[in-house]
Image 1 (spheres, rainbow, N blue to C red):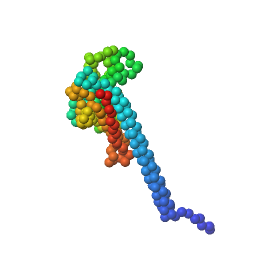
Image 2: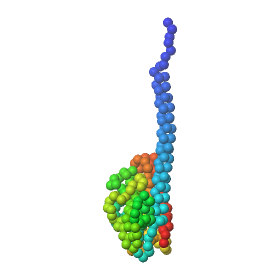
Image 3: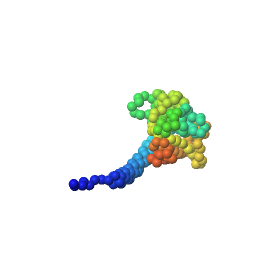
Image 4: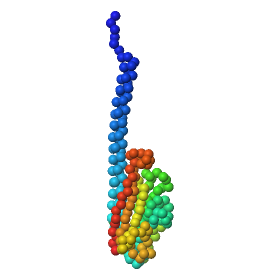
Length: 230
């Protein structure tokens, strides 16, 4: 009677072990590649958000119109640690100013507008909810002149604060006077003059959790310095 050769149990176990080892190696390589790609993508997202935010803020702040020795056109900068800003959900510094930034599709009134930036925490601990907002209000008067009296406290809340960019976890403004002295608050109504320069600093984060719990997590700080017209 002819014998048929077959696979023994030991050979089957050895083959399965080799297969599991190969699959584990392939999975590890794939997982490392995937995490590397995700981290690179998060870094790209962080850099893009920071560039967009800082570019627009720099251009608008550089066009600010602030009258020395007058509160007709003034600027106000609040430090987050003082808790004296106007926005109830603010978790960063706040800066407000007057600039000729009214879009051409808004008819009537002056070109001068009330503009400001603040960081909205939305009352949550989730960084993906943190939103850099742009406060914006136009003036309906054709020639406001010395009666220009924007009140940065109104409209209240978020009614005139558009969502600008998300995932911004920190917003800071530093102010420099003519002698290059550094201040973390500024009120041109009190000082009688605008700052000569403003340093804008933001932190942007992408990824779930934190750096200690997620290797894909990216958080970086970016800054730029803007000179103001005197």
